[in-house]
Length: 299
Image 1 (tube, rainbow, N blue to C red):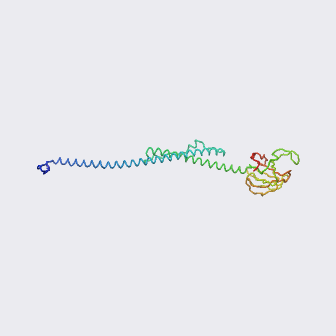
Image 2: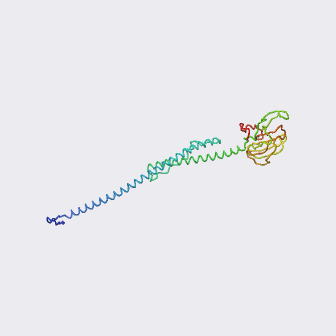
Image 3: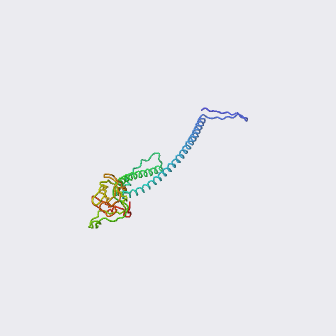
């Protein structure tokens, strides 16, 4: 086996060290492993620092997303509470419209399922996202139900509003009631006779108005009634205005509630200036008081 000698020339003399080939081989191998270990430690240290920075940034981003999700969840909760209040008001509206309100069991139906867990979600984010998605589904479901019920109430209320507009419900003129609806002794014939309306006394020329929307069907002189206007309002309603001094509408004209149609007079069989007013339902005379605000004696 060969040996290698290293000679050092110093002041004190010449010195030498002999090494076998095996020793040199193992020394080189040890030094190589030592360099490799230091290199690995250095690379891993750098990689760990990079991963630590990335983890710190991801943690901050996660906290930011969780904060946003919590704010969104709070906003959805606020919307949900307001939607519940809207639903309560809508229930009252439906009841007023004589419609069936949405039951609580129906409101709980129709909530969609949650999507599968995303790979990039953490457990905390995944749970927060599921809560938000559940709240969003609930709000969407309730909004759809409330919209449908509101559309239904709107249609019902439009019809009701139209019917109310065509229902005689205001006083046709200023004045005081001098004779009411029902049996009476006629002031001229002195015979017992059924009075099919009531009389509102006032000075000649006091304006007379239509008590509901409708179409004028007659503007002529009638025996005993003098100048008379008849208006059909639909829904079986008709009103009559008699003893008018003058008429300011024509047959076939559409009128709205509050439209001036004539003036108080004393034409026909009359003992003084007044308006004879009738309300008829399906051709039958009814008490006008049933269709008036009795606390007001004027329009």
